[in-house]
Image (cartoon, rainbow, N blue to C red):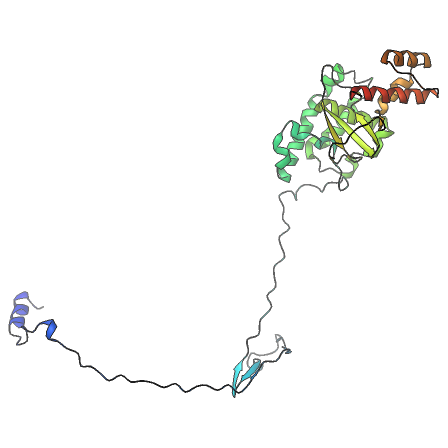
Length: 307
């Protein structure tokens, strides 16, 4: 090991210890200039179409020469793009565990109509959240069956608790994603009491009115009657329940009443029908009893709309 004293003595004995850094100069060297001769390219031949053979498992890498192109007199291997298989987009969805909706395109299940009245987030919710809200709405309506049946004289309106439960239970479990056998038949509301009664209950429980347009000049109004003291908002939909922009209802518009209303009036005698018409301030046309009942039912719907 070298001690500090030995190192100090070596420095003192150095004859060049007094030379300063500024006195040290580098020897300048001559600058050498290199002249690069120009490169002359005689021709560039790049084949527009080339047949590239794809090697098989039996071929060896040494036996397949790479494709080339000529630049001047030098042969340079050409770069051949290798196609890369693009993976197919994933089809996984958050709602894939639910069955596909069985209602036709452009239609809407009655349970979905006006859900945003009770939950404003429905209009901007994701499909999964919408199904959850539809199930909640169906469960809410199911809890109202007994109460509304007593309060609104459900029997006279054509309601049956069994049919209402059969309609609501599948929707409480799956929302609008239903098995085909539970799909709502919108075309039946004009001729079948059961379908008309189901829609009548849904509208009354939701507190809405539905203007269902059969054509540009023909529509039906549900429910058969509103709750006492209430004037619900009018929602316009097509013949399959799809929402529509509000349309003008004129005197030329033919208005159909729910079949339960017509069926109730048909049970009255002609004298009783005329007595009801007199109280309403209208005159019945000279026609058959069924047509008088339909005319009187339509007049009732107009009065509800303030016409």
